[in-house]
Image (cartoon, rainbow, N blue to C red; front, side, top):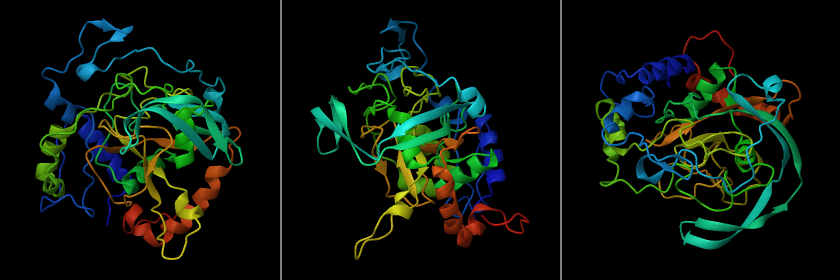
Length: 353
């Protein structure tokens, strides 16, 4: 049985205070054990030497490690948060409202790596196809635990992430919500504009050497040290230019973020096709990958955890919700009912989803 949401939150808080993770009796941390959530100072302490903020100014901001810059010039329009957000959303969340385009095309004019689909520059304007939808919802300003100056949690499964959001009266974001919050009304390929800039967001960092020790991720006594060796997260909000037009931070790079993949419910399957996972990852992490607003990685199941995987939460707008998420939450209820023992503690008196 997976850990209950309440226990997950408590465990995260313990780690955020700098305490060591505690594994099961046999030391394992596999799909059925305690979530190996790693957050904030535990991993950061391993990299304190030589990675502090330098005093030098570059492009109007503090120069951070590996060429990252805290306040570089944005290539997109200035961030404009909706003034109704304070009424529509809980503290720490921003309002995302406007038109959502289901199919957007961007034309790359300068590839970094065409095979890996990494593009240095796109040519505006974007192309939009399909029926435009009105959307209005709230999203956490930062990656979980949604605290500026704190590194986002990692080693969280989709099940863990969903439980953590529910325990706060929120939910996981739909993949389309995540996309809209990242690209803004202009439907940008990157949250900050049309040109990729590895100084702006925490991305395009070199792959680790040696590569991750996969065996270490099965043992609680080894996983913390291995995550610390691989970790290149930055604190939430440290890169002030890495913010979407709606005011959401760190959407590309830093950590991969779990979302609800609507295609699990909506895709019309051809003969022989398998149903997509309900779990999807958006945004990419700090490595040399796509790190754009539109792509989704749908290839990991709900129990997958890894050193660069985190999440953030969403909720319906309190004043005038768009109703889209509520439709999927009903479908999620049917999906979760046979899996109720996975997302709530045994002997719980609370009803199954």
